[in-house]
Image 1 (tube, rainbow, N blue to C red):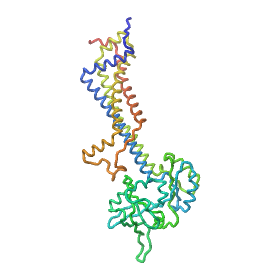
Image 2: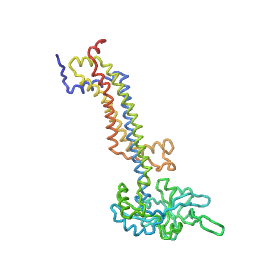
Image 3: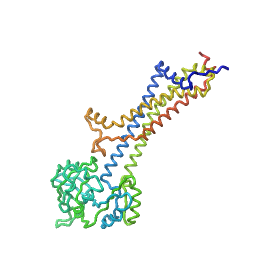
Image 4: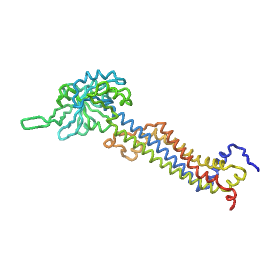
Length: 421
């Protein structure tokens, strides 16, 4: 029997490409193909952009939280730590610990005139606090070094300063939830302070709910004598905090409570990771819908090419060759859509902050209100493993979407295909 031998090998690729070009003459098929490519591209671009924004959001929030939050904290169950200097000497030689600093923590009300705001008070030693946090770099008015013992100075967040109309030199009162006995009965304890600085963390949680005072003033305010609330440790690598916390616990014994930042913020970061996973699944449905369009396109093409399939089979083409022809044709749609979507997604992810600013200017609105969200800017962190994973999944789905139509074409009988030709 005569066996057809094409000039170009592998001929399945040649015919598949030829069908792709010829398909443009058929408006319906071309339109469905175009919609499939656009759907794949939009889905991939959206996935890359959204995941990059969520990565950037998580990194930005984590860095801002850790600029105020302890990497590792040591405290006593009673809340009063008396031997913090000796304890610091015991743990400073633990691997990955760079510095330590004592702190006093408590709740209070900041009051000025008729304005009142609830805050967390953190008593610090300024020279040591610089070693364990970045709060010094966040001070926009005044100076962190202005916190001096027995001078009762306070550094407030920018949101508190705006709410109570505070600036450097303004007097405020700190009211603590501890009663004191007076001839007129029990009254809440309070102390007059002077604002010596204003910090701006770009996180409303801290800007509106945290103030700093000297640790000696805090000890007097909360009647702790020489005790502190705990010891803050800074690490050279925050990712090692859980392991370092275990080493610290072995060094100090079971009489102390040791917590790392992953425990204190565990629920928030787990929620962020779950949200990222769900977003990936939801946006993947866009790509899945586009793949159904690929299936529809190939089914239409197979019906139109019945006579061509019969002729190829008559010339000696194997069913596997017919299968390959239509898999090539369908894969082109997936490859083109994936390529366009990947490029568009990378460009969007790298420029999303600028695009958001432009939209805010055009629409005269603010998408990320600092009163609602942790941050007021939209960060982006493009991770190439996400790009590779998204592109790979798209290519696999596009290949799988060609299997049924191509298999249907390979099972077509030449005699039945030519019966009505």
